[in-house]
Length: 138
Image (cartoon, rainbow, N blue to C red; front, side):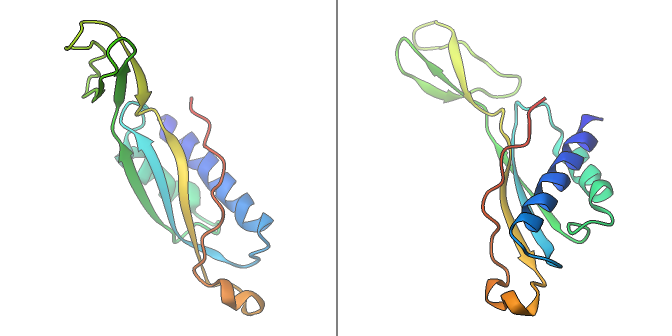
């Protein structure tokens, strides 16, 4: 189950970003991940793994939101852009040429919302942490 290692990497990256922002005792209220349907990640397994990986961290009570990104491909010959489906169809029906994958392999941290910001930073309550770097794709 590689979703556990992905969840652990996400927890580590978000925890580091929270500390770097000087959010101190802040806790993460919610975390949004963008997961491509062609990434090989099973959203249900990632959700379960996130709960395990987040225990005892600033993400322990965070709500995990997963946005699925559909697979997309583009034909270099005729310019057609289309959904690939699952399993992916990378053959252009219009001009019968191979298509290039343009989306659907994403695995990225899209949004982090903090809660319980310390009183000296009270004006940042519920503020987004700047977008973190992408989680490495396997």
